Image 1 (cartoon, rainbow, N blue to C red):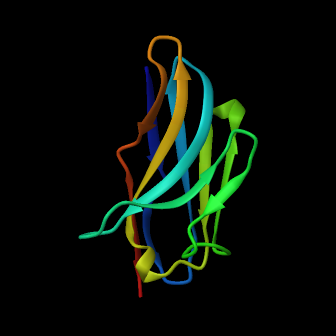
Image 2 (spheres, rainbow, N blue to C red):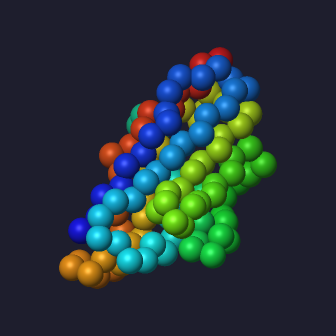
Length: 120
């Protein structure tokens, strides 16, 4: 079994920055892709950024050049550095981790989300 937990959300003014963290816990022996997704009120969940175990990244067009995803494999943690934030970035941000554990095998785990609010 594994768990994923996000932290670092909050309220920030437009143009400001936030750094989100996503930590994976449990009897994990491999974490493949990790990703950040977001869901704004009344909208579907959308991809923000993903990162492979060897550091290859992928970003939504709406955040390219403003957000940076990274990870620390020894800490089983991914990060999302968000700069030049806009009001339209307001959403609940979720982390996902494609993990392999001894008991369950390969499974994607999701965190409960962290709220990011950008005021204009």
